[in-house]
Length: 208
Ligand SMILES: Nc1ncnc2c1ncn2[C@@H]1O[C@H](COP(=O)(O)OP(=O)(O)O)[C@@H](O)[C@H]1O
Ligand SMILES: [Mg+2]
Image (cartoon, rainbow, N blue to C red; front, side):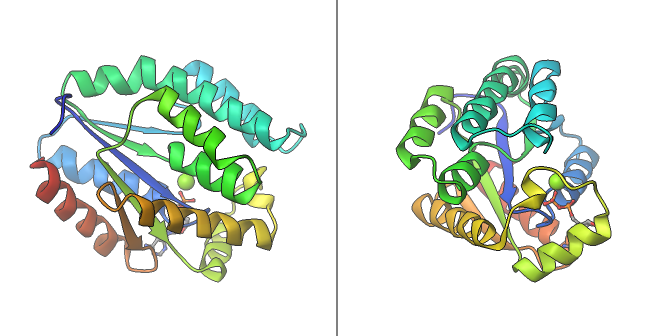
């Protein structure tokens, strides 16, 4: 089924859904089982892409939704070519905190960029995850978690309620359209439960 020896796993969902927390635990779990795991994130993952990330997340510079889209894909191109593809080629499990579905959900569904434009850029990158976990939490929980995390408010943490609703809708639409790739998980469950589900599904689908 797979031309590449590695396994490409992405974690998706809104702010505070628990992606980064789950990524960390899942990485530890797989490493304990003796697997090579590359844990990475988007936007970012290479020096160039991290520089683009700083620009994207900073709320100091106004950027149109299309500009943000192009920057996310520019960072992604660098990350995929320099880090993700080589890791998959050597057989690693790659766990990526956000990927193309975030651009589709945020910039297309949330901010109004043409869905087919984002789909075309996604095809241009040409690397589809083997499994995508979409973490879902109600907006109230997402808000409360962001507060308790206490992170500085970036461009995407400052978005209004209507945009957040459209983004959540976007993630649901993406998951519904690609059920063979996407697994929706209840992010309100305890971290151990969420990560345990991920572990079971990875084993079931990839044998890793
Ligand atoms: N399953 C969970 N149950 C309760 N709290 C969680 C869970 N997952 C994450 N958190 C907490 O919620 C906050 C946001 O989690 P984080 O992993 O940073 O979310 P994301 O990366 O999706 O924005 C953190 O303070 C984290 O400890
Ligand atoms: Mg995070």
